[in-house]
Image (cartoon, rainbow, N blue to C red; front, side):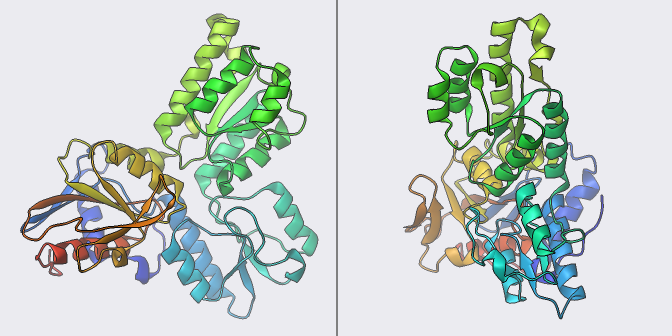
Length: 400
């Protein structure tokens, strides 16, 4: 696999040694057991796969290369390149400005951009409409595109099945940049609809089976279907793709459920005329990271600390997996862990930060999972490990 040039500030000697050791002993990635680090009373469990994925490393390499090669140019990022505050903060510190926020609202008005400016496209991609908007200003994005190759793979598959008359059902968060970009591209070649989970797939099945009216469809899925979408026509042939950072198992469950609904309506012998097989669009890195998290569920860990941006879908997916068996603290970085053994973490239920006091107690032995999303730098995880060891009264040397 290609080696990327990543800024030293994001790297960790400790984590690098662990990853290289696992790669040497398991080059085909068949062993999903965690790595165990022992520091006296503290045991740290690291999943087999975590941290920067191929798409994130590719995006980071391109962005910093553009910075280094264009010192005199005004450089913008269309929106957050990846959902990690450390990486985005460093890019801003290096002079890059963001045009849009995560939800597509403008920080900088389009009319303030000039044709000689550089605009870097984020790893999540963007819509053809925005590409055209930039082109109308005179800004070309060729060479400044950090879109993940696996997102592009999903786009290509949506185009393929769309041109064959299948409506594309996108499993994702409707406000997420990647979901919006995939939806917009699917709508170019046919019809598209966004759904968030299995519950909405079950509601969609009622429209497939003609149990609910088109007016009810328009009300329930408002602003989430392509122009001219007629449920009486455009739900006869469907294919399921996902926002690549969603839980892969959930996408597969949705696809299997809707496939069975179509079998019920049209018969198994006619399934190919009504359901497109899109299993090949699932992201390998998301699969690996989620499988590695599943393999931690029976570890007997006291709790897990998971680091990433609070708006990172793939990180949230890991948390949802781990919280089935243990307390999980969703943190930005080591600064969230305080000397008084309190921890500041994001609560997915209330959608805000909270502080848990005495999440660790003096003198106790602990087994702790430390994990990071696909956009989390290794140095962040090393910082968390060192802070946990400090609270446990243990030290980590450079040779550990």
